[in-house]
Image (cartoon, rainbow, N blue to C red; front, side, top):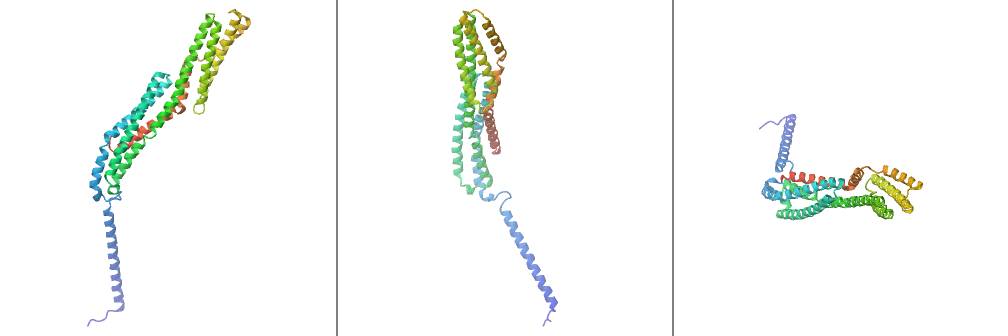
Length: 319
């Protein structure tokens, strides 16, 4: 019969047994943690080994939309180019070309709207082909990116219409000022021929054109710098009024120059010196109007163009 172990020996043996149990428990828990970690790939909370087949087919269907996205990107790029051209033609006062630019932009926005509608329908079909819970994170991310790429085009139509609407006052203003100048020239020619009454009547028509320019100025005042336009209108009106006073005087005297007439001639000369020597003042006015929302609209279109390109590149679709 084995002799009983000393008390301290039994305690030591018990402590060693507990220690081994703790080590075994630690190893077991660590192994379970490793197993859990291996069950999900880093950065993906789904099960790639279960979604792989669906992911391959799903991503291929999204990438198959590359031509559609490329066509949309081309249309948006053309709209951005047209916006820049419209600004250039506006500042240069090429109204015929500007109107052609606006018409082209209208066609492009209609085209873009149609392309967006078609792409949304195609994406709906891709989305419905596989339940989202059967897809991995990469596929889900591609779908979100594809949707966001389309969403970047949403403000384009309104931004273009802003640009077009802001261009209309500029077109009208250019025509009004040109008609005014032509009427004043005609009045001066009539006066030189001794037809002072006709000259005064024509200058009245020129004043009506300045009234129209003033209304346009008032409409633009809250969103554009109209200081140059205001100065231009005021100086033109002062010159017109000086001519009216002179021609009315000559009409009354039968064309004979009097001391009063000579004073009126001096006023006409003083008013004429304040007029711009060329058309650069009108060009500056057009620049001011272009900054009244036109530049912002063009910038917004360019931003949407860049965002769409980035989204398409992220999908590896190409542009």
